[in-house]
Amino acid sequence: MDDAVYMRLAMDQAHNAWALGEVPVGAVLVKDGQVVATGFNQSIGTHDPTAHAEIMALRAGAALLGNYRLPGCELFVTLEPCAMCAGAMMHARLARVVYGASDPKTGCCGSVTDLFAQQQLNHHTGLVGGVLADACSKLLKDFFAERRLAQKPAATGVASD
Image (cartoon, rainbow, N blue to C red; front, top):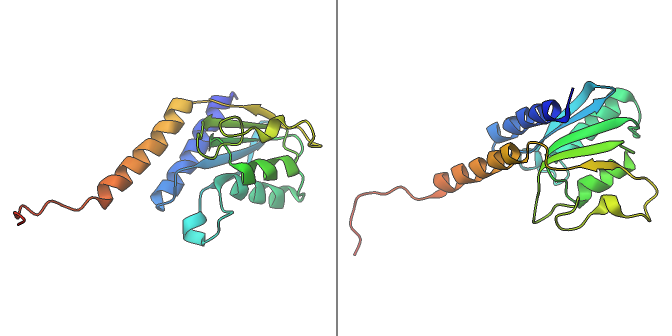
């Protein structure tokens, strides 16, 4: 399968997050062409700042494979990973990370910084960005637009003084 197929699966996971009121980010962990684990943002509902989509997929995959190292695995995520997630990906020894939309505020794959380009680190994970970027970005924009609309006070039709 090509990267876009796995990214669409990650987008499905992002919709799970949206349904729970979480920022819609989804992730899919793949090994040898097979989906091993999935994850979506759950930080708000679990009261856990580490419950990002990527971390959830890594945890599930490590438990299923019985190893905290995930060599040969690829992670597909709808949004450019933050520093915490990028660090976890490198510690897991992923072969490759593929992301959709760039994150100009917290992205650590080139937008703010590029942790994957640090030659001093002892593991180097392959990186591909921009897969279905427009669709992944639209998902986030639509979510936040919906939230802003929900937060607007309803017009009462009563004139104020």
